[in-house]
Length: 156
Image (cartoon, rainbow, N blue to C red; front, side, top):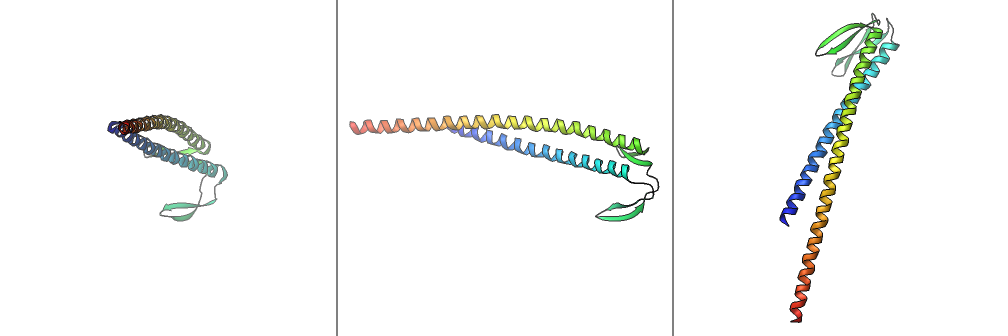
């Protein structure tokens, strides 16, 4: 009996670990989705703004400055690893879109990971339910055995 309880506790801990892992992966997905949205906003800005337009430039800490765009035809795009390059408008948009494609692939991988973890979680839950049912049946059989044993004692 004690072994069954111990196994159930172990399964419960496994489920908890899987749930935590799912939460972490979903948080990663949210971050990537946010990055994709920011890229959409950047592409929209590049496509709609013109040289001479006034924009608000974030300085950090919730502070902004108004600035005038000198040249919308040349856009500075992050290449990753702390590097950036000045690119023509069309090339900049292409670079941003290709970064979105990479993000899409990563999001798809992570969603697959979540599905796998959820399947694993369901299997463990089923195992735990089966174990609980078996333990309940054993308890019932023991109780019936004790009751029938008591009955025989009374007859004697």
